Structure formats: structure tokens, C-alpha cells
Length: 331
Image (cartoon, rainbow, N blue to C red; front, top):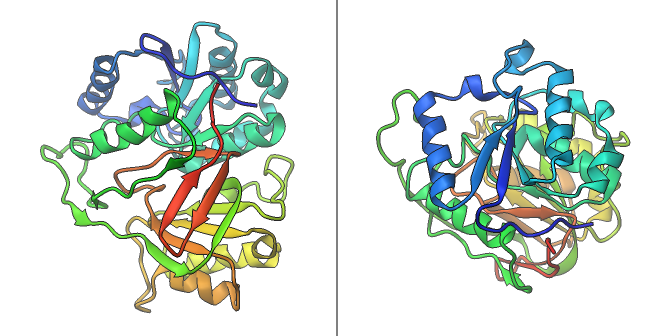
């Protein structure tokens, strides 16, 4: 199931399934809103997006209400999240998946929003989008916000397939507190890494690995099928933590099923003094394998961020460091 393309003037609803708008500095919020409106879209906010409860989120009931209202409102054409956080998986057993299936819309977010994206895909078959959120992505300053929007806009307005992902010329993981940022972040030379050569084609599935662990093995996690291409990323973790996360996938037989792996950049990775990179730890956990692996891809917490449609067919050419979308994600 796929939603319809976005058109200029369409209403885009901002919801807060995890952290809410009170976490966002006002000028960052206004910058993001102005950015979207200058691009020609009507940005509106869910009524409970500033309600303060536990974990910097509104109540479960309020967050669920906002999601249901956004999907049932015929004027809303796209639903985008405010921020990530820590507790989106609280919502999964309370959502009306029949309502969502009857009103398919573009759904966007990343990080903790992985729970919402994968659960809705698992329960309805609706292609969802692992891509930027309003505050942390579109509240960023140029040039990174422009590069992120370029990829995002290409998808939501409809792209021609096969679509070849272009590697951004630069990236950043520099942290500047929102209360202090008055300049663009430092640019680092970009390079995707072929960890294991080969080519494969399959359904794209994945998201933030740490979040997936909160509902892995439940009915809200899509079944990983033979031939799928797994994409995973994480942020601000250390070597010990990601080794444990990779080992979970190994023990669950995931690496025996997937035909390829895309590993995103890891923002602010702590190697615990080992000198090892995340993809080296991944390879050590997997062991002897012939599946293609491409690492340091820009589908993660760093800037810019490339849009990944969960559930669509992609071709991974790790040898030549290419990812090609083979299936249209929107009508």
C-alpha cells in the first residue's frame, strides 16, 4: 500500500509521538516552520503537541488521539513527526491500524519514530518513510537543511525509478546546542564504505536499531523475509552496546535471511578505546559471510539525511557503493 504524492499547498500535520514541541527552542521552531512555508506547504500542528507529561512527552492517550486525528482528517496529506525520543513504542498497542489503512498518508520520521514507522508498515502494509523530522532536521541551518530537503522533496513529490541515491559531498556530526547555534556546522568530507562486495536486490526494511530492540519479536515488528535488505543506524552509543545489538540480530537469525545490509553513519560513536568502527564490529559479529554490506550511508542522525522508504524494493551494489530504488513509493 502506498500513499499519494505531496503537492504544493497541501496540508502537512506535525505530530509528537515521542518528545514534544516544548523540547524545541522557539527560534528553531520558527525557522523550521518558515522553511516549510517558503517551500509552499501548509504546516499545521496537532493539538496535543505541546502537552507536557512524563518522558518529555504528552500522555499516551493524547499522542494516539493526535495520530488518529491526523490520519482521519481528509485535508491532511502528510504526517511528519516533531522529534525523536525514547517512548514511541508505548503507542503501538493503542493505535487503530484499520483507520490508518483506510486513510493512507505519507508518514515521516526517524530515530525513536522507527517504532511507529515499522508497526504501521507491519500492520497495514503502508510504505512509511525513514527520513527527517521537523525540529532536528528542518530546524538545521544551510547548507545541510537544503541538502536534506532536496532528497526528501524528491521522494514526497514523486520520483522516477530506478532512482540512484547520490552521495552528499559533505556531512557533519558536530553538536551545537540549539540555544547557542548561530552558524552552519562544520563540514566533513564524505565517503561511503564497501565492507563486503556484492550486489543484491530486495525489500528495504529497518531503522534505528536501539529503538527496534524495544519491540523486536512482537507483532509490531515486520517479519524479516529471505532476501530483504536491512538498513540500520544508531547514535551516541558505544562499542559494547552496538556489539550487543548486532548480536541480537545474529542470534535471531536475521543475518541468515537478509541479502544485504546498509549501515548508516553512527553519530558521536564511542569506540571504548578499541579503535574499531561500527562496521568492523558488525563484520566480527556476523562472521564469515558473502552478503553485500555498505556502511557509512547517510540515513541516520548525522546531517544531511537521505530518505529511505520502508517496504520498497531497492538494489544494493556495495562494490560500487550504490543504492538504487527500484519501486515507486507513492502514487
